[in-house]
Length: 523
Image 1 (cartoon, rainbow, N blue to C red):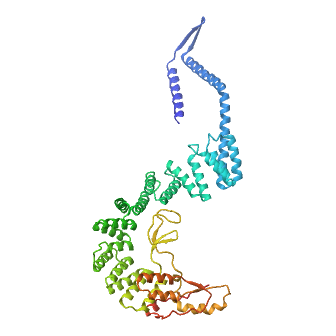
Image 2 (cartoon, helix red, strand yellow):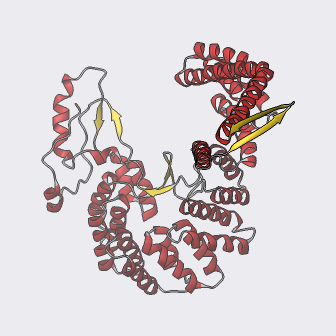
Image 3 (cartoon, rainbow, N blue to C red):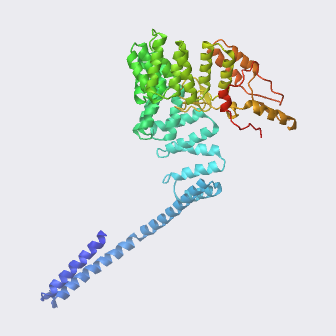
């Protein structure tokens, strides 16, 4: 655009000049070699312009002839380069599509037309073609050669990392990821693998530095970085709680500040503060965490924060927690446990039944069985409650990758993933899927048993009588929970007549009203 405007400006200036000369007639006399030439001023101006144009044209022709060998060679090079890049592009598309033969063909063609030093992507295409052909050893050699080139080093480390992952060599994979993360912490694959290695070794300080580098490079969002830092600081506090309590308290408080609703951080921070006689601050931390998400560990530590408290004082502290989070099953469970310790059976029974209405689960029935045994000692009702506990959903626990743990851990024991444990109910029992009308479903199964093939098996819907008897005769709540866990195992055997439970207390009217008209079917 600028050139066009400049050309138009020159033409306009020439036009104005010639128009100015045309309005002012005159003559030019030139004497040369004894001859006198007389022309008008306009003709003289046109002649001068024509001579300048001719000189410029002649100069351009001479320059073009002089530079013609270079121009021809440059044209050939450009054409060769374009063909090479076209072959490289086609080869990359073929490699992405999984066409190993075409990728290898285009690799050779591109290597002839373009130097690999000039275009490093040829090395990548060569390695990808080797992988598609199944030549993993050759691909690894090519990735290793890339490590000598600063421009290709990260690409070579990525290729070696993937090959190590394919072979299942986690140590080698993490070694290559660590080298890549040291150069470029913004690489997600390198940072995540290195983070797993650091957490597996228990190098919490190194993991914190890596998370800070990820945050500074904006690889992860600020909230995600704060969550990771809180998890790592909590793990660090757990590791230092015995050897260096002061450092553990500092780490735990920082973790709680980053994630006030994170129960493990709140529990360990409050516990360390309470051990240093700062009960008020520790209780405040627990109250904030409880208000965000109630957790039994929070309730246990909060209620027993002052060892010298009487049972009624602990009951009042439990009721204070309930005020902070009303209409929640965990609040009612905490009050029920404290009331049971205080021998306030009416309050304990009311809160346990309220917890069952809000969240029907195993622990609530077990607690209600403890209350029934402590108050009345009626073993029939206790067995009935234990039977309900067997079929109720399990209590929440720390679950990660199918592993159920009573205690929180910073990483998964299966995958090594950070912050994998979540507080939720584990997989439901088989009894949870069976209709509550078990007594009516059993005859239907027994009647159809003879028609089944010999290799078919039927599911025993009732718990083992010996296990239930042991559960009923357990002297305390802890042993009863162990007995219930034994009774929880469903027995798979040939379809016999199912025995009745000994001393069956029968079905209460409330349970009869809750029954569903549906029936359990095997097929």
